[in-house]
Length: 317
Image 1 (tube, rainbow, N blue to C red):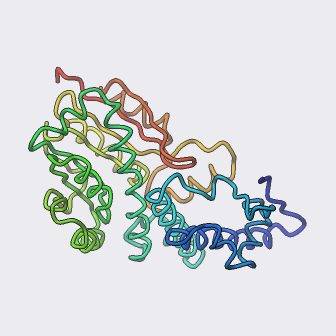
Image 2 (cartoon, rainbow, N blue to C red):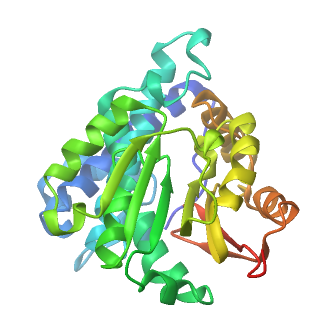
Image 3 (cartoon, rainbow, N blue to C red):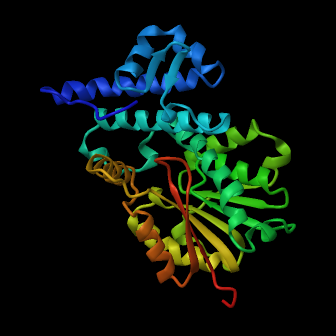
C-alpha cells in the first residue's frame, strides 16, 4: 500500500485535497480511541474512501487492510499522536490565516487549543524518556530512585510530560518552567484533573531557561530544543549544563533530519515561525559536546517523531 501522491496538472488543488486527507486521518484515529478501527472505517464510507484513495486503507475479503502508519503501537501512543496531528493542523490554519508579521511570534501567538494539543502530545515523549531513555543511561535510573531527586522540565507547557515523569519515578520532584504564563495557567488546570498523589510532586514556575541560575541541582534535565530560538538555546545550554549534578544527564528533544526536501523545508518554516530553531539531531549533539558534556547518545521515539539526544556532565565537575 502507499505510493507518491500524484500532483497532476493542478498541484494546488491536489494539495488542498491533501489537507482533507489529513482531516480524514485525524478524525478516524480520534474516533478509534474509543471504538474498534474496523467499525470506524465501516461507519463512514465516504471518509474511508478518502483514505483508500491515498493507499492508507484497502478493502479485502476479510474487511480492511490498513497501512501500519494509521495504527499506533498502543492506546497511549494513539492519543498522543492524535493530539500532535491536531496541533499541527491548527498551526497550519493559523499560518494560512495570518500575515507575515505573525511569523516568529512563538507559542504566545497560538490559541489555547493549540497549546493543549501540543502539550498533551508531549506525554508520549515523557513515556519514551521514562521507559526507554532513562534505563539506558548509566546511573540515571538509580539517581531518580533516590528520595528528593530533582528533574527539570524546560518549556513544560501544559505539564503533560512533567506528570508522566512524576508518575514514573515516585521519589522524584519535577520542576517545570516556562516563559509563557498562559501555558502555566493551562498546566495548573490540567494538573488539577490528574492524580493528586502524582501532581503533589510537580512544581511549576515562570522562568526562562536562558536565565536559570541553579547549579548542581538536577539529576535529569529535559530540553525540548526545537521550541527555543537559536539565541535562547545558546544562552540556555551552558546554564543547563551547570544545573546538572556531576554525573547527571541532559536529554534534548530534536527534530530528525528529514530525507526529502518537502519535509525539510516545512520543518524549517514551522520551527522558525514558532520562534524556534532549525537545529537537527547532529547539530544538537555537537553543541552538547562543545559544552563539555560526554557519552552522547541518541534515541529515536516514534516514526517521524523527535529524536532524543542524551549527554552526561562529567562526574568530576
